[in-house]
Length: 588
Ligand SMILES: Nc1ncnc2c1ncn2[C@@H]1O[C@H](COP(=O)(O)OP(=O)(O)OP(=O)(O)O)[C@@H](O)[C@H]1O
Image 1: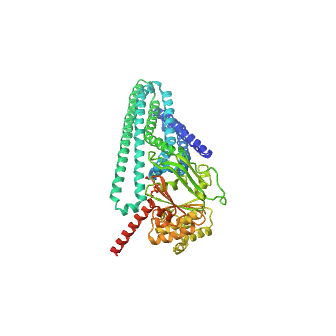
Image 2: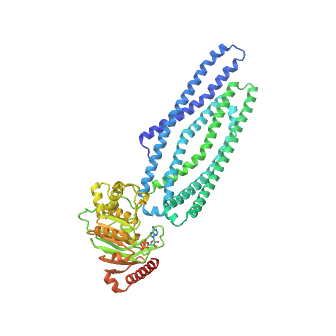
Image 3: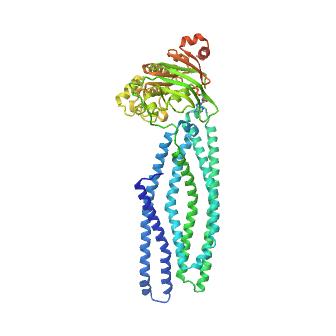
């Protein structure tokens, strides 16, 4: 991942400071050894002379400690700046990449999983990145530096100590690769648990309405327990690794004391040398122990980083921008589906549209009706280019939509209103302006008026500044729908798609929303997908879709006369309506 220059400088400075701390730390055992040698000479001499002799090495040691403190402050400050900047950049890049992905990507990955990558994985990566440089780098340098010190003091003693090191390295590598595997499994499971929680909390009203709290709780507990078990397994692995390394490292210190004491008895080294050797060995031991502690974190960090970069590198097949645009005045809104074949990428075996052809003239109102699951909403998704088709062609004013700029297509040419419009937890004004960010307040109010929304918005105590709850939960279904209509209208789209726009509403709200829709469809090409056939009687053309094909086409009267599927659907709805009325009468 690219870092900007200031961060590279910060990083370099913090690396240099961390290295300098390590180098200073390497000097400390030598200095301590020197002081011990001075002390050991003074068992029989005067205190005054002792103070004179010890003054200089003691001052040097104090200076060294001060430098060490200052450098520690420097590298920690610099490193946290770099770490935070890197994490921020990673989050931005990942979020940017996620928003660009094809809709297919979101069919495959749950929201919770994506949020988990954006939060915990970036956090894990940042922590291990910082630890690697702050402690890892220092520990490695100290180990190498102190090793050189050991060799300088006594090659023989160092050789004795080093004899056991290869076994430790081999053992560490084997355990390490197993731990990396454990970490990956645990992270995947944590993401799975987050996804379950996200779904339940995000849809809490549905959960409550079905009294499914216990079931959701069980589901989440199950996933979280699995994650917990995998993390415990990882923890036990890390504990075994650290336990073994502690035994090995302490064994090395003990061995050094034995061997060093023996060499001192033979006058091969002095007391000061042994002191330096022991302090240096302990520094190495501490560094190695640190490395083994760090190891668990690094293992987590590497696999977390891999998960983040996997999505940052993902390139969508449908770009967000680029391609032709058509001048607003010139856009007639002629739409044509030519022999389209399509299967959803997540279910390649199920063909949704089969040799599907449909022509909608500019300014015409085309209604799609038919059997549930027949492919009506899919037609709308394809027109928005949420997915690319497998075969055939979709054109707008004769231009293949693959050649059109997708941002222009979705942001300007097409207005989309569906059954469950999602509003954001900002003000009503901002929600409507979402359709065209550069719209003035006056234009927002005008769009709301056209959508029959102005009246009820003005009745809110804060009017257009009223902040809506998450996903617009604080307004009624009919109000939400009218705000969504205003949001779509403010783009002044030439093509309007209404996918079951009124079917979630009660009769009264439906009437008000329908009135608003009747206002706004004038002068636009309109594709209405409707379940309630009474709402599309006046459409210029009605196409009856079943099993991914158009079975019948014509206006209401001609289709009724044909006595085909449309006629059957009308009959069916009339019966349903009669039953509803009877039930209603019995209740009242
Ligand atoms: N994102 C998706 N991934 C995979 N399959 C999908 C997806 N969306 C819809 N489908 C499948 O495509 C088929 C057509 O769905 P579509 O929503 O287009 O039907 P519809 O005619 O609008 O139905 P309804 O009237 O019930 O809304 C269905 O079998 C559905 O299960």
